[in-house]
Image 1: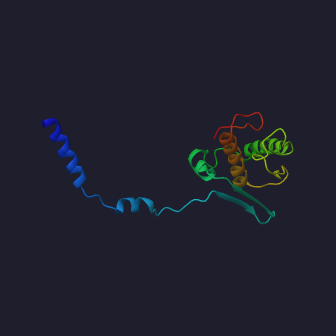
Image 2: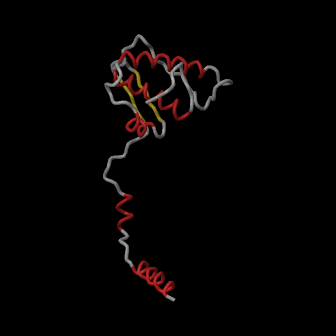
Image 3: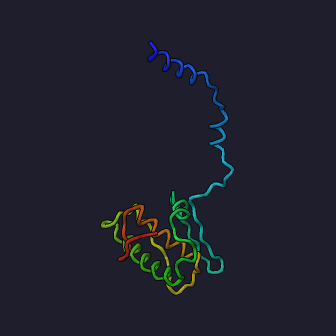
Amino acid sequence: MRKIIIPLILIVALASCHFDKNITTKAKTSDAPKVSDTVRIANDSLEYEVVIIDAGFNSWLYGNARPRGFYSESFLENRNQIYVTEWNNRVLQPQRYNPNLYEMQINYDRNIHYGYEVNYLIYNYMIYFQIVNKQQLGGFAPRP
């Protein structure tokens, strides 16, 4: 009899508790700014624009990528040249590589000085792309 009464009292006590309905509402509304998954890289003086639209890239960038300044600009430029060359080769071979992954060519010119920020974002997108899609561009294993 005691084994039945104690659990019954606990159930009644829990059922009679009053929970504040505002808890779920407060959790849903956040004052933190929302981060878009679209990254726009532009330089009006060079008249170019790069737009990266990939769900999850911003989150990955802020959570996994090395901080700005970790790599030298020449390192980023060299890796970007390798990655972009391989990317463009795959775009031109839709029968061999998934055309849904490699939709369009990237016009990256080694002779144009894009600046650190552009190279940093392109490099990190290439790393993100390789990790998420289990691809390997060039001879390097992708790592953040």
